[in-house]
Length: 539
Image (cartoon, rainbow, N blue to C red; front, side, top):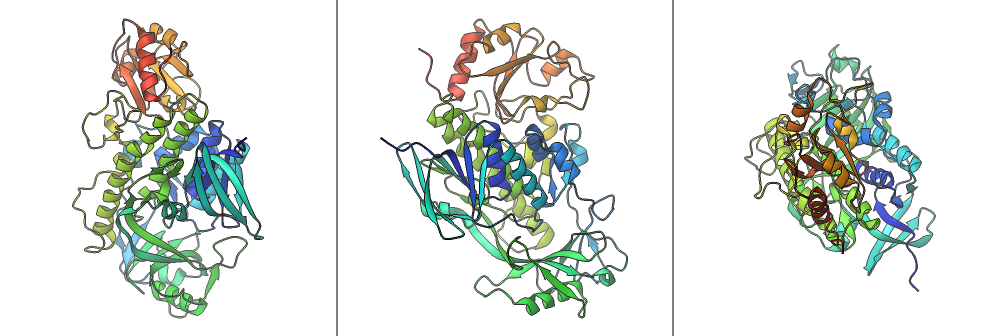
């Protein structure tokens, strides 16, 4: 008799993407285990803010208030200040446009972008995932994985050297740009992969003499090498993250060499510099990251899926990598949950690659466009694509897959966030809801399928109650009152009339819509849901 599964889904890697995936799976009631080879989370701040779309997603799993409580005050300044200079002490600081279009998206999202260090976010994700039942094990390394009919078997090793095996139905690899899982599957990357390696340090160093009273949160510098930066970690100019290009074939610099690198970047030859460990419980003061530009040729092989940096490598310009990774997890989690519960057929899982890979390719081109124009003109892989605003890159996807009915028949560009109007394959629009608090239609999504209808859509509501998979139905203007907007206008914002209906998936994307009433709403909705879930039609 075959051994039962120890867990439904095994997630490998406890970065932003892996922890988000474990949290989303737990939110859907899926038994999930996450393993991470490091003994704890990184202390390095890395990505220093969450864009509105990520705040929407984390709001749905109960994290918005905790994130706000842990937000970063950028040295008391009203705005984030980024500059370019030869050294931090240079008398001439050139401003860098960070292209923060939060103000433009305020009317189209219930959430604002939030300044917060990635290590703080990861700690909140870990806590919330455990609250919802996810098992998270640090100091546990994946040695290898094998697939068999009905599941995967992972061989794991703990820090004490003990080895053990774990059986799961599926495995999600969130183990970074050097993914051993992806390598073991033999999945190549399409693109130049690593076009440079970044060396990072966290330091205590009084660089106030270089600042000379100026406020600087991020400085892109020419010394000691191109692509050097200093990022402030406190209000006083005495704690910093330092990064610079690294010899891909050389050994890591020793402590004295690291100190000289920081002094050269600051333009302060005699500055006192002390290195700080970047991984709690270790003495690791130097971390090296590969900065690449490539997308995996496949996101799935059998029962194993790639998400985040394991699936795509992007330069940091634009801050797209983390956003795309979390959205990967958000997209995949509800599909795995639907299959595990028996509500969907296995082919639904193929739509993960169909939908997410084009998003990564577009975001990568946008990141490279910004990289070449802002930080390294003439350097790095070339792309002639015109830059579009960040909100469009992060919220304007048009999915084309069998999990979307009636969307774009041909590949089409993204939709500006102001143009989101309930088109199948796009993020459902945000409409403020009347009543206490700042609730939004966005808050309706996350747990399961939601059917929104016009105020004359009672037949659709009745049909939703007859579906074999749970569908929550609400009538705009009757069950849901939108703030400052007539019911007819709220329906029109979703592309439907008073008797129409729009079906929204658990990830907040429109799966199908009927602009008006149907002769047999039960049969029409059932056919749509069956096709979306790749389920067997009822007998």
